[in-house]
Image (cartoon, rainbow, N blue to C red; front, side):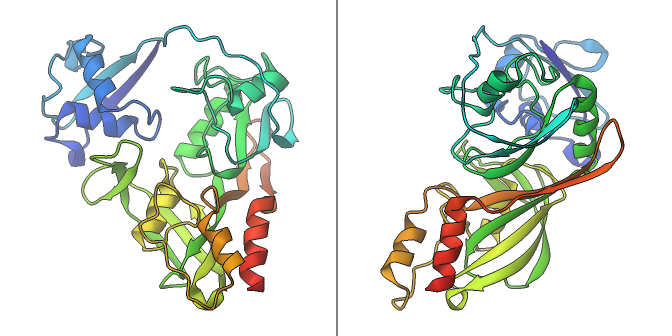
Length: 326
C-alpha cells in the first residue's frame, strides 16, 4: 500500500475535504477521483492531525492541516508481458527514452490490462524497471495520453526514478510538443496560464477553472499556417504537466486540436475552396494531432545535459503534407 501526505495551503482553505484531496491527487494519480476519496474516508484510510481518523468527506479544510491518505494495494491482477511495438531512442543502465506510438495506453487500468506500454516494457525489460510507481506501473515516471505520440522517459531503477520525478516537479525536465490546430492563435507566441481541474459533470474531461484546481502553464509558438488560416502548426512547451493540459489550454483559446474526440468545441467548418480529400482527412483524423517531439533533461547519474528530438509520425506527416499542398 502507498501513503501520501498533503498540507492545506492558504488558497486551499475552507473547501470540502473530498474535493481538496481529489485536487491534490490530480497531478500524481489522476484516477483517484472524488468517489474513491469518499470510499477511502469511509474505510478509515484518511488521517488528520495527530493521526486521527477522518470520518466526514464534507469536513472543511483549515490552514496548515495535514492529511495522510493510505491507498490500499489493488486487487491481484496478473500483468502479462506482451510484444507490442515501440521505439527505443536511447538506453543506458539507468533509463530509456522511448517513442510511444499513438493508440497505446501507458499503464493498465479499468478495462485494459494487457495492451499497454507497461505490458510492452515487461516484454523487453522484465525485472529491469523501477518499482516506485507500484507493480502496475514499473518504470513509468510520467505519462502521455493514449492517442498522443512521442517521447517519454522510463526509469530502470528507483534511484533514477526518484531524481527524474523530482526534476519533473521542479520543472527542469523540458518537454516540447507539436500540434495541428483549427485556426491561428491570436498572437504568434505566448503563454497560457490557466488552472485545470476535473470537469464537474464529465469525469473523462478536465476543465479550466479560475480559483481552484492546479496551476498549469503552456508556452506556445505558431510555426506554420495553412489554407489561409484554416489550420496551423503550434509548438507547445510545458512548464507544468497536468492531465490533458495542452488539449484543454488550446481549446480554451478557441483552437481545438485537429482530431481530438474529447476537446473539440472549436472545430471549424472548412471553406468551400478546400479540396474534398483535405476536408475528409481533417474531419476523419482518428486521434488528436499531438506529438511529443522533444525532451531535455539532466541525467540523474552522470549529470550530463541530454536532449532528444524526433520527427512527426507518419499520420501527422500525411496531415501536414495535405494541408500544405491544398
